[in-house]
Structures are given as structure tokens and as C-alpha cells.
Length: 165
Image (tube, rainbow, N blue to C red):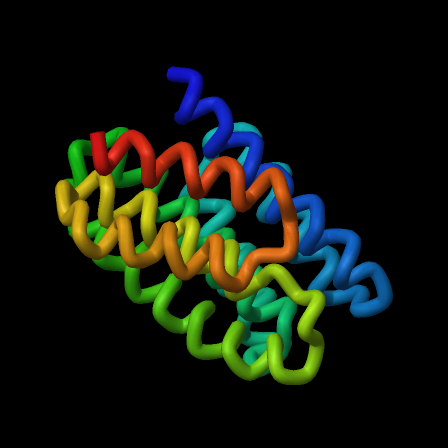
């Protein structure tokens, strides 16, 4: 439970960071705010809809990458609730893949961006829950490599230690 609690804190940080980043973009901010609220209430379908709206309004920037990570977290949480019926984990992985694609572009423009690291971390969690430990380990290692946030590095290292034990 300690690890799941840290995961929830991380996703909350992603949502809050996203809200702060989009403070000037009113339509996107509205959708990201709603998504964060819905996610916090466990209303994952509603949050997914709001993240989708934010992506459609701003498809090729850091905010979109963060929205993909947020939406992936919702799919992942839904998958946990229904024992991954409906392919929720695969949807989460697809969103992480898109976030990683965008994150690779963003990090070239803004080396301080943590979007890429968050996407690797999120995808690592999904792979871990799918019992695809080799892929999870690779993602947590990538997260550590590209992250500039010590708490994220620490959480990824803890997941690596658990998977390797």
C-alpha cells in the first residue's frame, strides 16, 4: 500500500503541475482542472473525457504530453478496478507511448521538462501490473536517466528495487 500511495501522490502531482503549466491557456486549463477534479474523485471516465478535450485543443505541446500521462493514469486506475477487463492497461500504454513521443520533442526544447520522465514512470507502473517486469524495469531506468526531480528518481528506484528483489 505504501507504494500505491506514492503512485497516487505522483499522479496528483502530474495533474497539479499540468494545471499550473496551462494557467494562461483558458480552454485547456478548464479541461485540465476538470480532469484533475474528476481523477481525484475516482471518476475516471469523466477525467478521460476532459484529458481528451485538452489533447484535442493542444495536441503537440508539453501540455498535451502531460494530458496523455494523466489519461494513461486514469486508464491504469480503471484497469486496476476491473482486473484490466476492456484492455485498459493497453490504452494506458498507448497514451504513455504518445506522451514519450511528445516528451522527446519537448525535452529538446526545454531540458528542464519532466514530462518524459513522468511518461516512463507511468508506463513502467502499467507494465509492472501486467507482469511484464523486463519492460517495467527498462522504463523505470529510463525515468531515472531523464528525470531531474529527486522524488521521482527515488520512487522509480524503489520500484526497480521491488522488481529486482
